[in-house]
Length: 155
Image 1: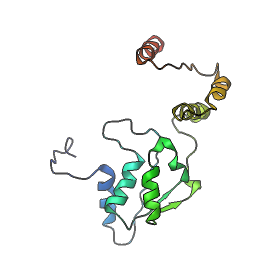
Image 2: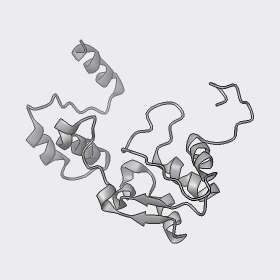
Image 3: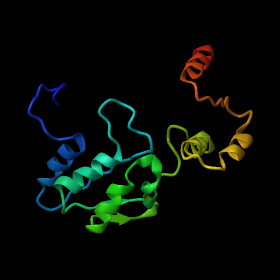
């Protein structure tokens, strides 16, 4: 709002502002957030943790209905979920978990590999072996090497 609308005194995060708008309803309101791990890719995005922090900070009478799998490390929300849970603001329902990324529904196992690598999971080696030849998987710890490889492979 500060940048796009020129409102210098705007003090809400995007989630807090949206919840605030719906909180004005006399009876009830619902917000549906489709959230994936690692979604904080654009400037100013904070992911599911910002939605939960907004509930904790400003909306004690709202509750979140979430998958218990949001406690996974990729969502960076476990601490907030535990705090909201102790206040009775969380209801867990694993039917709400979207287990297949819409961005990579044909490569679900590849998404799992990325999570395994980031979590330093011992099963990453066997997953890489299963995926060998299906995807151009290259691992490096050198950002220069990674950039060079991407430039060489880009169209």
